[in-house]
Image (cartoon, rainbow, N blue to C red):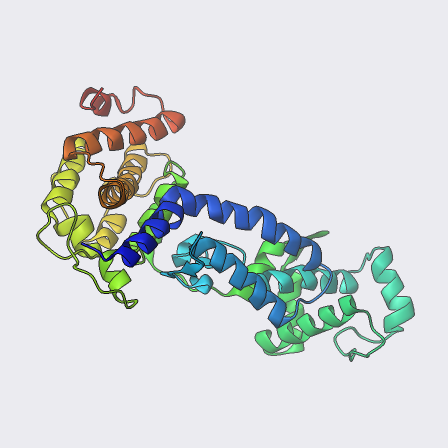
Length: 359
């Protein structure tokens, strides 16, 4: 079906990068290690643009890279990955915005009425009575102070005036506590994708399922049509039905095999209707949006599990020649969903699902 080079590259992509668990693991590694270092350096100096680009390049290459080949296939921009969950991203820290948020905290300390020792020293030996909002950077200033003044200028420019910037900064301080996340949200200014992202915010959804489902909703998985768009030539055929070309719409809905899985899982939840749009399913929960309703959790957890397991089964068939029929896939999905529900709710609430699940 594929020529040898494409098969080799794709197998590496899916084995190391495209499995949702691998995605989740890589994101955790990036968050805990790389951005832990940024918390140290980013809180002290304003990182140079070239340094930030290099860090982002390394992170992107690690996330999308193909070990042993040195190549990568990118299906989602790093900027999009750094967007919040509500923006269709994975909520990875946006380095420039996080760096500014960390430094603007020091600016807040300089104007606070009850300043600490560091702020008092700056006022006596550096500012010398000059308003921090009017202070001009000098070569003799430390790298930290230069960074604080640069962020101050960015804040004033973004807010429109010094007065607006002062009011904004004050809104981030409650008592003696500086709310770093408010400053970060301001600097990041990430747009939202729409109501469909709310359906993936339920805590009962597996994190790896969340990632796969989010990418599927945005047509960002490494489907055969997406790979062909990157210049690879091969016969595009769905590995479930062997009849149609594979794209997100066909793989997750139009294919008879996937339609059978969807029909069964919706019937299991006593929902006879079927939609051919993942975005529609993510906003059309018939049980409402309450975080305390087990049926709502079941609905969204099931949707994400179906998408993830269909993607996993598709990859197993292509690269490892392992096949699970629709009944076996449905059984696995039910077990996953019930396991998550049992963590949050008493089993007596969803006993009807237990009665119709496969042992």
